[in-house]
Image (cartoon, rainbow over all chains, first blue to last red):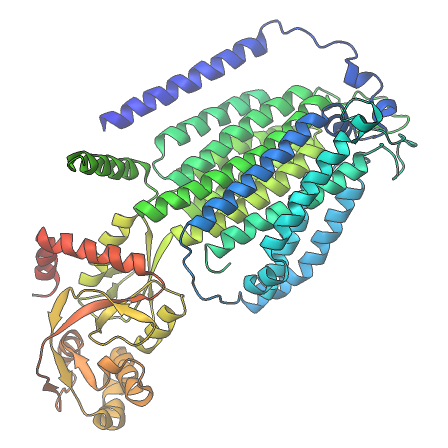
Length: 234
Length: 122
Length: 269
């Protein structure tokens, strides 16, 4: 009883302190942003992407995104490693009901189509590699439910796909380091910008989106399979 | 307004994180704290009368600030990575102690420590 | 603009309801709903990229992974045959000795207890196919069939033999119209005779069921008490060895602290 009261007090202090600090800075005289900061001045000319958000995170701040991909990969590796150590409860696998399987097999092509749209048009409209990869992975999850998780697991074995995933990551790193060979700074975008608004515009953004999407797709699928294996059945 | 809501959500998240005993619900509260930070940052980029930061020829309206949005995209993916990895650790704990109650896990750990101390040193 | 305010106002309410749930699955679904509302709020705050990412990752992927994990750690599913005194419905509650033992055990290992009442002949199949964790309801499990293991016994009982022909041919017809409640028992027992599903209980009727039947005034002629000692236990699926181990420890503690005897006195004597 006393311990829980102490915990409540600590929690209240954290909340009040943190919110107080933030609110104070929020309502006091913030330095006003520049009238036109660098990234707002001529982003479309510089990045070639009419979606400014994509322009920022795949061009101006590409390094952030690369590290984010790295964090994602490390997390997936961690999931695989620690779940492989735990003793799996091998329950026999049972099928979902007919209704679920039919509905889900109708949904999966839609998921793949949406994923394709997001990855190809990531620099023109909202979307991008991460969302696209996760949508495709949920499409695979639908296939897994329709076929039975074990069947899907055998066809798309996480072990083999894991190698592809690492290959994609290496390819991404090699691609961003390639300009060094030409005497340029790493992360330089060498491709032409194209006409903003066209599919083939935005320099390397389309390539980055494709690589990130396949990376996230495989990573998310491995995570889903790992959790499903340690659950017995979906 | 959105900023105030974000602070309320932050407070609820911290309270849930500290006061709930179930580890899985603690993790969900951690996700709520993360979401509140994201909401706060997105609300900073929004301004009255702004439109989505996608260039449309001939449009004069001001665009929402794309920088916080781009930063926050990473935060969402990292949030997923943290929650999934933490969930694996919870599963390992459950396998060992057969409960997700944090206080009972602490008691079990204390008991184990005591037993180790009672063992004669070799 | 109004839509944005309303949506933002909903966020703390949904999050609060979600975090106050005692069941993990409810809390998880609540947080999934919260994530979707949050994605809609981002959309109204002119951040479509963030909205799509939040909807796919925050709402879909995180929820999917948690559901997968929770189904493993969340519940203790018990399949039981209904026996008055051991495990029986009273209105919308379940009472009985076995129920109380299992409820304490589920609390001990931090799982939600779910009891499903099934005919006795289904228990073995459900356990060996991983549909349930524990079988209960007056099971005498001295020689359990393959795929399941017996737990240590918790209550001694007696076993009565009867002639299968008599029950399935005569008693069934005469007893039914008068006692529709106990139709299940006789059909069930007759079934055992035909299909040999649970060899240890074929051609026999245990003490709790005999008492229940005689309390209903059913003619129990033709029953003879068998020699030997019999005891009630639970059946555990062979895949859930850790549950069997935990239960054995729990029963040991229950017995040595004298709480088991108190429970037995309360329900049986």
